[in-house]
Image (cartoon, rainbow, N blue to C red; front, side):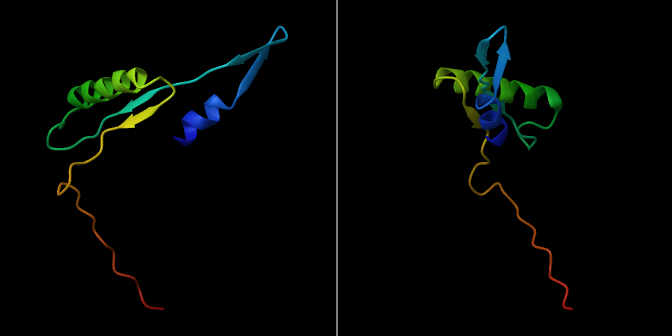
Length: 79
């Protein structure tokens, strides 16, 4: 999202004309459903089309399904 905002807020001047660029991103994720690069890219491509369909200049990530995320906590060292 930060990258999309930075690009959208950048103005390129060429021959006294302001040029603005926007981007849409679709993000895939490696997981048990997308264990290789081809399936991950296919998923990202699907989300890219969804981002464009929603009006362009969007970021649409693949969000993990509930119950599928594992967070490992690292114990703090005592000083």
